[in-house]
Image (cartoon, rainbow, N blue to C red; front, side, top):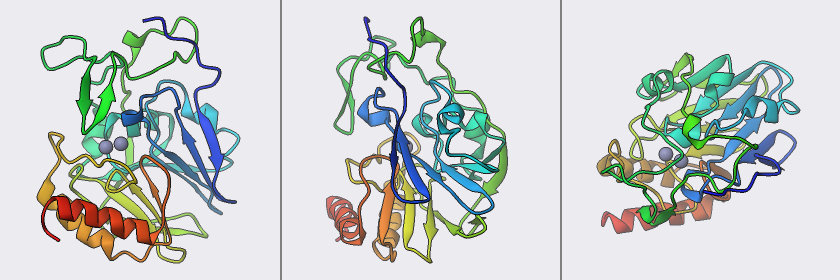
Length: 258
Ligand SMILES: [Zn+2]
Ligand SMILES: [Zn+2]
């Protein structure tokens, strides 16, 4: 396929004193998830872990200086690839089994339903080429060697669970629709909201095998009323309350409930 070798695999952007964003620029846009690190007083929080193509733990080493909990907002492949590198993993109880036994069907070389090369495929308007990556992480990397490794779930979450970092408290909101156990993490004291794939500022996906539009509509009604100051999504740039409401309304209008 003649892919070039990437200079580095992760890009990093400091959002504020405590929050850092990492992403994989050489993963196709559909699968390029936002990976968040939140520094707490007693514990750090990692929200989603990307594709697991190279070590996230190593890339995050300069950031992590204490115990860390790696939360999965849900268990699509692009969000859970490096959870196995962390001792403490958390997911909604409906998604925990997928973190512990990830689908063996995730490949970097794309195939359509008939097993033919998937070039030309698209999902929800996202073009997919013949591979999920646009550069190799290092010389000699074999695309066929890729698989998602299982992680041990040490904390099963549900609506109302609290993740306490000592100086920051995040409440788990169960936000089904995109997937059955999708969650968001909301810090009421600051209005900071990590939303996973429940909402982000891009084309949302509700047509996967485990998606549920009726659930998604209820999730959007709930999100619309959430008193956020900033939303850090599972993909795309962060945004504020006004944009959150607008994005909810776009979805709700498209589904003809508003
Ligand atoms: Zn997803
Ligand atoms: Zn995603």
